[in-house]
Every structure is written in structure tokens, then in C-alpha cells.
Length: 117
Image (tube, rainbow, N blue to C red):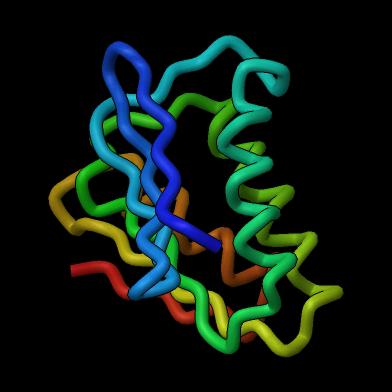
């Protein structure tokens, strides 16, 4: 899959094919599942390629509302069916919502690697 970028007023979500990494930057507070669908579709398109490793980098995402957390949660749960993919989520110790919320993803996908620094 080639490089892809989704950009809004306050955020950028970009797929880096060289690293199999989806990078999130800015503040994401979209209005529900419909508005998050382009981001969900990007994540699912990467997973459909069945990469051995996939990374979601949230270290520069300063805010994510409950609809965004729900979208990511559903994506992580969906990866249970794709046993070949090792998912790594990168978070920041300095961003309060990440310290609280990201650990929950390990409950949804026990093999998930979570790196908060």
C-alpha cells in the first residue's frame, strides 16, 4: 500500500508504508463513527495487506474524543481475526488521556505491544 494522508483542521493521520506505521498528529474530536470512517478505512486497508508488523503511533496526538477511542477499540478488537499481525501502539507518557486509555487496548488484544514513553 502506498503512502496515504488524511488531513483535517486540527489533525493529520498518515500511513508510512516504509515502516508500516499509521501516524496520528494534532487533536481528533470528530463527530461520531461516520466522521471517523476515513481513518477506520485507512487502518483496515493497512491490516488487509496482512503485514507481519503494524504500528499505530499516537505520540503526537494530544486529544482523542470518546468516538475516536471507540473507533480505535473496534479496530484493535477486529485484529483478533488477523493472527499474523503484530500490532504495536506507541503512546506518550506526557499526554494524560493516553496513560489512562491505551492500556485498555491490551485487554482487547492480549498480544498487543504497548510502548508508552
